[in-house]
Image 1: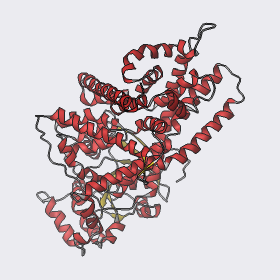
Image 2 (image 1 turned 45 degrees about the vertical axis):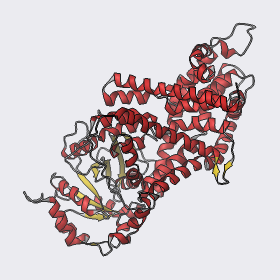
Image 3 (image 1 turned 120 degrees about the vertical axis):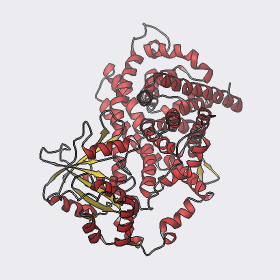
Image 4 (image 1 turned 135 degrees about the vertical axis):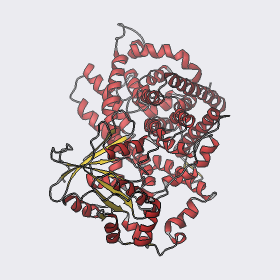
Length: 622
């Protein structure tokens, strides 16, 4: 498969679907089969992720593959499982029924996964089993009679290892063969649980006791009631330390490259409107945000690695108690965890919560979780006002402050949820999670995940951020000041006038008019606030280097109280219209959205007010 091939499926391609339980290795297999030839969207009318890819078998057979949401049963209990059920049964209104199912089952957890496979036998579709994680099964001492199990089930079984291309070659070769006949359904009245027990007793030998396995030995430590939370706290602490420590050299190099590119582009241009548009609108705006890409990718590298290793579900298990303190069930953890990347998929993931009260509260506190779009704002202000020094000789002070901001957001979310759920009993069942075996993260999957995040981030820079900054440049540049007018020209522009009008509202929390101006385009995307500040200061400055000197410029023109006040504002403020729009779609209530916006902006203003005046009192700066 060539990397330059078009991601469009040929008309003669065959249509298959990957199905399986969560944590069965399905996503790794999908990534290994399709590589970069995949696209992610949502099913029409449903906020459930839709992953589609294309690949070619060794004999040239074109395959279109759909990665269906993980499901434990076709008796669905969530929108994700609804989609899997409807596609498999041919009842989905936009997705055609696949010609064949590839059932991905984990060799390390056949007891759970075989139960779902027996359901798939009843559908009347050809089925091929991709038996994943065979390397882990061998390492655990599991002996699986694949040939016997295949003959008994009447379904072809292909062992696969999704860590490399060679490991999925047996499946590619099986897909070159004619599709098998649909398997014979189970006899009526046969108990599927008893059938799974029979299959396991007949074809699987597990000589190792559960307590001797590496996963069980590690879980004694990682899931310990005392040491487990301590280790989780250390992992999160180190993660935020590395966001600063590892990213800084990369950010410096990227910043130098952007400055050099700007010089090459702008040098031939004479001064004037076009020069100002490119320098102050495009380069000052987009360039200021792009330099934060290394930090965002390092954060996602940690999240992806923890997920690939099998540790992330254990973090959910450990934090189930924290959810109980908030008056919620453990089912709220996964949506809230997703909100640390972006509140939008987090709010969508709340559909898996069956209890209406818990689902609504989870949606209302999801914006409090610190999404990656806040990271550029945090990094800019921490870099400008927090000294780059170590604490106790091993911890970076800047990383400690960043960790503190995340901790404040989490604690605030717990308190807010507790207030909302006070006196109302939850009817959700306790959290039940499958804990997969520990495994080495797949470097190819990590690289592909980071590539997708980089493309998503840069696409936002090239569309939303550049567009808004060009608009802000126009508002900041026109109308021109009258002849002989004192002061910078931006004071006479439309943006300057709006900023000065807003300042009377935000002056009590220490915001100047430039900050007020940046808050407006920042409603479209939080990180736009950074590029907006660069644009405003570049236009209002008396030299041409203001955008390149934004960080030291802020440290000299702003007080520490103003900077910390803005940090407090961004911990709480719902500076994202898309989040509010998704909240409206998920709840179906404009009143709920207005109430959420009111309480979040109210918290933001109160936190900023207290932070500003307390910091002024401590520093002694009037």
